[in-house]
Amino acid sequence: MTEDELDDRIRKVARGYHEPPTTPRERMWQAIVARRAEAKVIPIGTPRRTRRPLFWVTALAATFLLGIAVDRLAQRSPGPVPASAPTGAESNLALQVATTQYLSRMENFLTEFRMTEGDTLFQAQARDLLTSARLLLDRPGIQDPKVKALLEDLELILVQIVQPGATGRPSERKLITDGLQERQVLPRLRDQIPAGQSHFGVS
Amino acid sequence: MNGPWRRCNPLWRFIVIFHSMGRFAMARDPAEQPSLVNRVLAGDPAAERELYDTHVDRVYRLAYRMTGDSTQAEEYTQEAFIKVYDRLATFRGEAALSTWITSVALSVVLNGLRSAKRRKAREHDLELADRVVSFERHSDPDLKARLKTAIDDLPEGYRTVFLMHDVEGYTHQEIADSMGLQEGTSKANLSRARARLRVALADFAGAWE
Image (cartoon, rainbow over the protein chains, first blue to last red):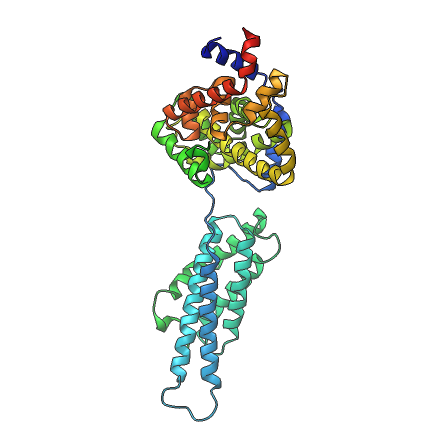
């Protein structure tokens, strides 16, 4: 028997190797549908939103807290104030920096919120921003009524966003985005961010 | 014993597969392919099902041939289609859709088999040793069983090419595109696989004459 003949025989016998049964189409399709639903796979063509690295959230929060801490230290500094110690103007500057960064974060957050579907990461970020808004509102340094009103509006919006399931329900999302539009939150935010220190509303 | 394909890192294999799809393949069904893909990408559920119905037999058959187990074959087929839907946006249309799907399915099956093999090797070291000894003594009188053992013992690259070409009827071009190989490498692997099987079944040759 030649090699070719032997190969031919082997090929014929090999057709019985792991001979597949009828394809269980429906069963597998149901499983695929279920697994994709479980993984919350939404329309295939939808590009996956790139999750912002937690690094940036953490870094911005750290900067914000540092600003607050510097401000507090400056105000509570006991004893005679040395020439190099932060003055009232310097501590206000720290608060201005923190406020600017906060408003920038809010602008980014709200812009993305309007364009994408919410998820748990969104809510975690909203909680962080809510805490920061309340800290800022507690600071006596912020006296400009425009900035105060803006921060109060932002606080209300964030309270709505952090409600469980709020970002997942279309009706809730619509309420939030309608509120954003009615109160002109984003234009007011943008007014405050790029204009320089005189617009920060910090005395 | 182990070819370069088997030795290299699985991540590299993946990169090679996707890269090669663009380099070597030609679209084989250009009229049908883009419209179906676009419909699926647009989120049309009917198109998703159509894509599944068109290609599921081929994927399942290959998965079953490679695993010999219906549960595993179903599992790998499902995983392959989930990956296909997830990554369809990266399909550039330069390869035939069926080839691209086969390459995704192959990577799922081969990775799954490797994991299973590692698990089994840990659990059944002694049993495996016994099986190798019995094979070397040519004590198995049944041709089909001997052939099964011989195919099972082929290196992964040889076995895959043998099953795809000689058993499932894929062309060398399709195999090369799916596995990220040169067509010549696919032919060489098939030739080596056949040679090994001939040696393993040499004592049956006389009976067939």
